[in-house]
Length: 312
Image (tube, rainbow, N blue to C red; front, side, top):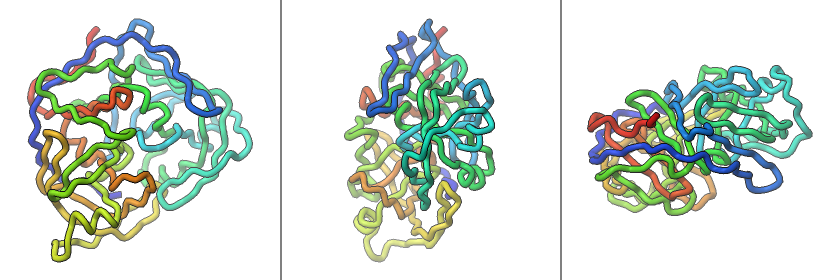
């Protein structure tokens, strides 16, 4: 995986957090149902996280068993490692399809109803999807028991604080931006409009991507015309496959946030209609609030006030 380089952000603003009433349980679309619950008193306690190889990892429990979880709002389902599930005594159903992880397609099986708890913050309960996360664990050098995905994170408000290495997941609308904070509208799903090297691109907000920006080959040719200094490089996918890539640096602007000499790489190949990904190499330079239900991405600079905190 490609570690991000330092990014100089120019941002202004503050934000504050407010206590949110716990919403009703939320069913997932389709025939698989999950419910998301929050503390009954409407308060929450942020969970510490580890940022390893620019991926966000935190501790939770699954059916009471300690579990290291990777945060990935671009992963369609929440995933549980099949090896972990079997050791925890979780029953698995028949094969249901395949999960794409980087360069591989891994078979998946639906679990029985399980409970994933992030203490004092959020509980996810229902039939989840299991697959072999061992290649991901090998690539990261950490035993990944689960990936908290889009089916949950698109229905909550999520705040990532790299200054404290703390993560908050609460009900949508439970975190509000203060005066002057940079509020960037989400255009479709979790997509934002950005300028890279002066060219307009649509980027998917992806906290499972450990780089800053990755562009499709079509967008790359538009953003970096012939004669632009380009470096050859490699990137490692979530399943440990090493692939060739191109690298360059460019200015980046998203709403009122600007950055210089941002590391950009090529190779984005998803068929979502987006031009690329916006990842942790960018978000690690400031506090970020993502609330897909409110269609907002909020960017807050480090070192300018305390920023958003939960209230008792």
